[in-house]
Image (cartoon, rainbow, N blue to C red; front, side):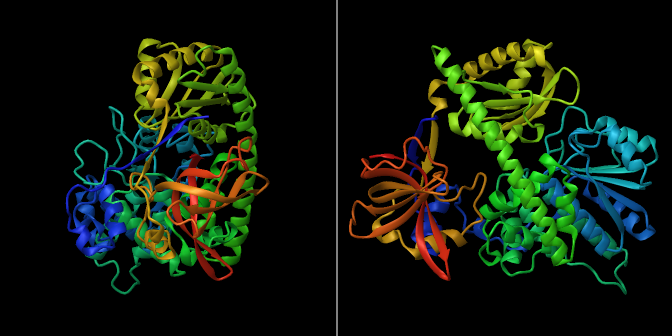
Length: 578
């Protein structure tokens, strides 16, 4: 298991305008996240950067406006995750609302792989579209774009992934990360990019007088989809993304979300009126992703598209079952991985390799990324999980990394030294995918571990939890918990507030089939005031332990709602005997 250290963020050394305008606790938390200007906390739609800042958007808007006005058939080519699903649904809904003819197609990951491949172009061509629009993919689809244009289809690429040295020869490309694009937010998710494109399309149609005599759609009505895709894709919540997520959450809380999103919250037992970003990331997003991992993401897209609440509930129930199946498969794979590592650690004099490679031929391709992530969290080192690929003799890997180690660059280093090992690979700093011949796995594992040891120090294998400091007994109350809950959205690169402190253990008991721990604690400075606390997915071999009466814990303040009553609760992120 990974060793964790709790470290405190440095308290503000300088006075800022935040302290004059905000609750002291909020001012401290925001300051710790780099907020220095109160304007950064203004999350109104009017604060969004103008669409015209995106390179290529005017050409893309012109092509789509032409398609709407002339009745050309537009086919959205999506991706098989939550970002791709929300992007596809958004494109279809908004273009239809503008009067266009639009539908979607998402390649099955097990048959066609990722993105606009020549094979998926052939499938798309059977529907006889005039214009293809990629969402959340396409920036690396050199051959696919060429194949589509050769067949007479126009192609608009909308994406957010990092481009390679060569760009596809599409009719238009909109991607904040393409060379020459001055758009200040480089962290838009795919759904954010297509949202911007659609706002530009509406503006172009308005300029041409298209909406004279017909209803003009309110694109803000679709911000619930934008919020879901943005949070689920774990992109950095910079100012632009925080605006999109905040506004989307406001729609959900007001009960004005898509029926599919409301149905997914319902099966996840979440109250739409109290939805926060983490509900989208940990409850709704995984249920959409499960369809793409185990079956066909089209189920998820249909759930987001339907206007019928009954159909939405039926599809949400299917997605919920797929997620249960995915979780069962994942837990089985994770147990096998941990057992293999326990045997490996006994054999290795130095313990586990610094770069872990795990493989079983019967593992599910769609779940290896989650398993890599879970093992990475458990042992705090870069992990690649492999399963057999559809192609004979090949295995497919999914990698997850830790802060400070760029996994895609590491694979590039392995490929440069051992060009015979990797068949293909791609990715970014924290996640990557690859394929190689099965009989080269052992050599690859050694080469990968060597690169990891070159680039990391032993201290890097210790996970660090960054705390916003200690809260006094008078701050551990419902008012503070509500304040923090409503102050977000919190997420990637703008983390939810985490605090640490020492507590007396009054009670402790296992709950949830023994996997979770329920505690009653007392702050050391106020032993008579009792606090409820819960820790999820505990080490069942260590806890509960009646011999431990004091803890040092890193925790989040949470509002626990039960039968109409709200109480403060500590969610323990990590704890150890004090």
